[in-house]
Amino acid sequence: MYYEVHGTGNPLVLLHGAFSAIGTSFGQLLPSLVKTRQVIAFEPQAHGRAADIDRPMTLEGMADDVAAALQQLGIERADIFGYSMGAGVTLHVAIRYPDLVRKLVLASVSYTPAPLT
Image 1 (spheres, one colour):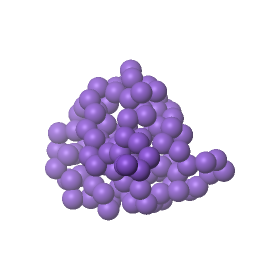
Image 2 (cartoon, rainbow, N blue to C red; image 1 turned 90 degrees about the horizontal axis):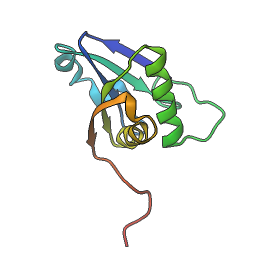
Image 3 (cartoon, helix red, strand yellow; image 1 turned 135 degrees about the vertical axis):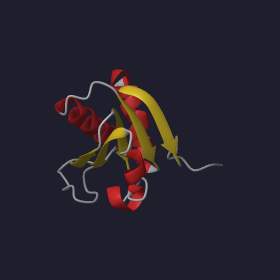
Image 4 (cartoon, rainbow, N blue to C red; image 1 turned 60 degrees about the vertical axis):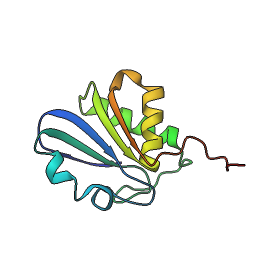
């Protein structure tokens, strides 16, 4: 995983959409967010500057990576903002690691991969 940390204050995690990166999903928001928050932005496996790894790309796996990275960074609880695929990852972080999550912001999230009938 690739990540960036900007600013100080209560931690806010940013998780971008599929086949995107930090700058393309959040570049215009970052300057405003870092005025009052510590922003930790992630690029998961096979996205942006992160390498791919030899495992299936799943929302659950990316959620596990986010949780492990936050624990490695010493972040006990954070607000998490996920956009599109990142929102799906955010939901899995909340389900799998509820103690890490203070608040969720979900934008353009899908709750099921099944087509509507």
